[in-house]
Image (cartoon, rainbow, N blue to C red; front, side, top):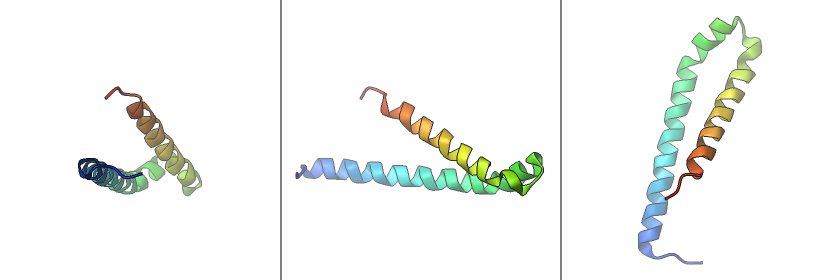
Length: 69
């Protein structure tokens, strides 16, 4: 299926914005991770922090998808 050129530009812009926000989120989480692990008292919960971060991002994306355009 081919889209008009204007739709291709919108799709590309949307993908680029999504990539920027994903990288920004990863930067924030990786920067805050040592402090979070220190507050949780150990590396045993490292996987939980990453999982909860991904779960929060997924739920945020799900709520944004339901917005009317």
